[in-house]
Image (cartoon, rainbow, N blue to C red; front, side):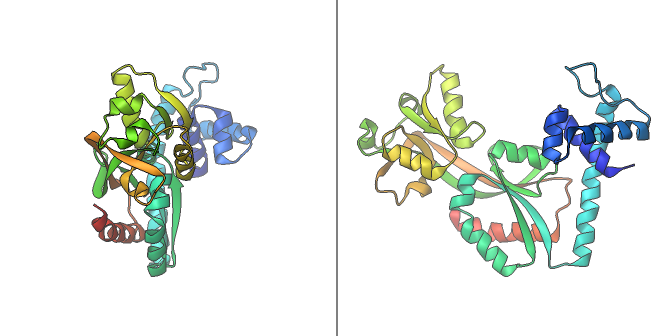
Length: 293
């Protein structure tokens, strides 16, 4: 069975659309259509509902998708193991981390790890923790830094970072003189927030939905420096990790009451093969991140 066609089929099943799947794979849509047709001929089954827009996969297609996902994962593991046999000192790590954590916590850590293991390649993926967890479950990543307070039974975790979330605001904001503020007070202010899917946004969104509060969101961005500039210029206030605002003289950080903590853990899929490179990186992160708890 052609593994490349199976891989194309899984991309199509996940995205549910020929055009988007072809774009993600990097091939023309007609080429994807031909590949799927050849796969159907190869297995002797109809896999795609071409007349039903509400359900892309047939019943047989859904069964094949489940089996193909497992097969491709196993094939990737075999490939990784063979790579290690060729060059034990090398290897590639697919590591997922949010932009904020990647920018403020990991430049020094990654640099030092590369100095110790120059032959190991690190493919860094920048997404929110929710998206990174999905990528782990789909075996698209080897390791990822995700929320440690909501554990998925299909993943293993080791806690790395525990930080307090604070409100960041300009010095002229009426709340800047407070020792602590509540989420209710925060939600009544003009806001500069992360996009949905990021924990620092979720705590605000969940609170506003629970109490039916309409948020005045002036800007949504995952760019930390842009957030800081907007806060300094009184466009709105934001949520941030306390460490990131420690040396900011123009931004006042106010703790929340009750306290809000951001717990991050290094996670990996239980049945996913971890290369020696990934295990070395895990060990290094655990030792390096310990003082940060």
